[in-house]
Image 1 (cartoon, rainbow, N blue to C red):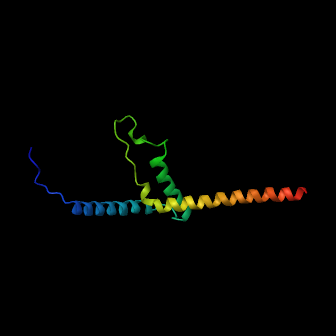
Image 2: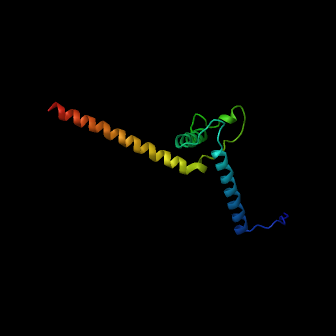
Image 3: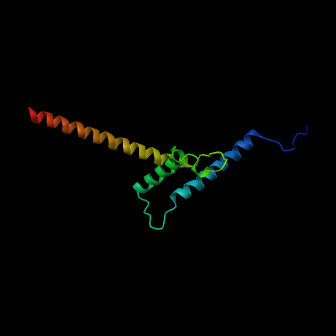
Length: 116
């Protein structure tokens, strides 16, 4: 068996992979930041876009949709590139749910007091 003349260097290869991932992340972030013709990049738009990226990447109803009728592997996309937006959206929604739940408890408590 003939061994390839190509030499591998773990450190050099790791650096090259790191640079490639960094460039890919930068390019994907550019796709994310790209505005539509009538789009205003407000916080709601950013949240909606990040959520849409996540949804079409990981939701079971979309899983493998581009492969229908084909014998191809399903690859995951770049939703993780905008993880910071997804985390902020999750925090905002959790805060809103807690606030709504507390206001509901407050109304129930006030209603209970008014019955006495």
